[in-house]
Image 1 (spheres, helix red, strand yellow):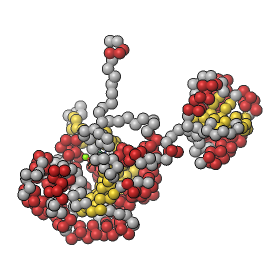
Image 2 (cartoon, protein in one colour; image 1 turned 90 degrees about the vertical axis):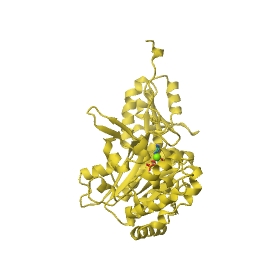
Image 3 (cartoon, helix red, strand yellow; image 1 turned 120 degrees about the vertical axis):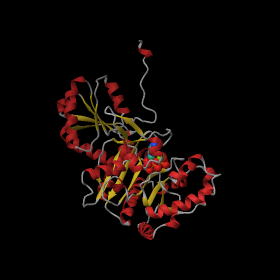
Image 4 (spheres, helix red, strand yellow; image 1 turned 30 degrees about the vertical axis):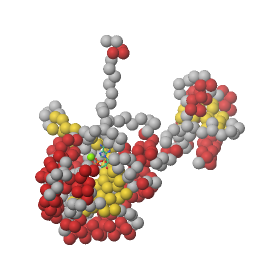
Length: 433
Ligand code: ATP
Ligand code: MG
């Protein structure tokens, strides 16, 4: 076969490469999150990407978009049905139970990683995407609901996103209250069968609450007029919700109550919330979560109250990019480009580079590699993002010095002794900033 006839293998549709030009944005965001989790006392948990299919079927619910049509499920060589995780909560619960983390103790966990859903790829919606989430176990009061919402709010504040996102809140009540409401809702929908679309008719018997979630504009008016769960809450759930809203108000967090917010997964009860934005078109939910007190028991554990949320990293990066909120300095690159003026200076340059990296742990120094003429070396320095080039030639080596050249300012180059170079660079780079 001739070379040109070999068909190049491409990535799977909806699964993206993260290129070096973009990875600094992700690192910027991830670093913020990691720091935030430490500040709020959350500990990281990492679970496998693949789980037994039954874990998701049982937790997320058989009649949900995810389980019905979005899972990547396959048989392994031993004919066991496995699934690439579509979300993080089920795995977290499984792992916490399996390792006794829920036994007589509370947990505040966070995770991050790829999730997989077979959806139609479009802007802000992919088949492999990434989430960062938190899950808490063992707290039944509204204080922890407030705490996880405040954690997310602080993230938006610190990223400069607060004025671009809205907190939507609802309560799904207890499962008993929800069951009673379900009958009321079905009775209402049955009076409007002519307006229900096919999906909704199917859900009428299996999962009528999900109909409220529909984005079909033809049903919007009918859905807005539907009986509201908020009016059918049990007393305890109402009290829980009122306390939560008071705590949020005291902390200065604005919210809107969205009576149609039911979330796509079966395991929620009481508090549900979403942070949404209008800046990303129809893919507007950047973070979503709520309380899921029944899930641990449903998966075979002891009844354990739980609250969590997950945010979509792709959508948040897209939002930060759209609003130009990622600072220039966070976008990778280097501060200093160190170049041997010819090949005879290579070894001395390597030694000097290592000396500087040892002295200045924060310094981002790129060493010129790959030879070339002096002119091409300087060109590479110019093309880098460095503001300073350090030149090392025969004279410098003999004098144990280096030439500091300013790449972005019209400023005389200077000769500095190698012993003092670390100190000089620190001064130059911090006075720059
Ligand atoms: P949507 O209504 O947009 O489908 P969802 O209810 O399915 O969202 P969750 O399961 O709650 O989403 O996931 C939490 C977050 O993960 C979402 O708010 C979103 O930011 C992100 N997310 C979900 N699915 C995708 C996807 N296919 N591609 C990129 N991000 C996603
Ligand atoms: Mg979805």
